[in-house]
Image (cartoon, rainbow, N blue to C red; front, side):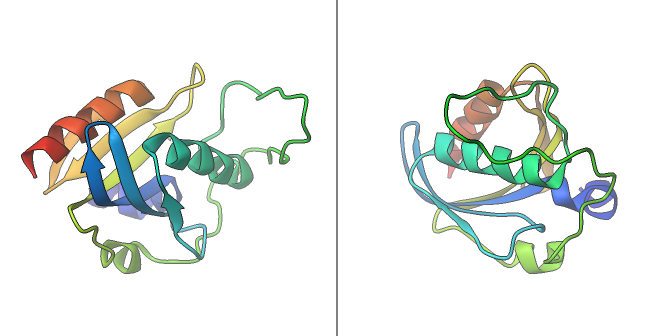
Length: 143
């Protein structure tokens, strides 16, 4: 976990879970490049909103450009180290009513995320968003 805190803190998401009912997950998400939390009523909402944060940061850079008939936010060019507003130590203070997870998004290839989930100092690797949701679901069933 420490290697990510020191090298890519802007790719980390602190996911604080307040309620869980099957695949219905609600709570708050935090990232070091945004000053306010993201309240979400569904796990898919946090994924879409964090995608916009990553697009704005330019890291991790998406391998595909999103197309839409509506005006979209500008995707910024790649940035090696986007500026951070909050330290990881501040993010780690946030806890959910049920659980808290640290998600590191290493890449965004094939319109999905690749990375790892940390829970209680154990690392779980995922290669798609669906894998990540399955990991979160199995961990939440144990809480």
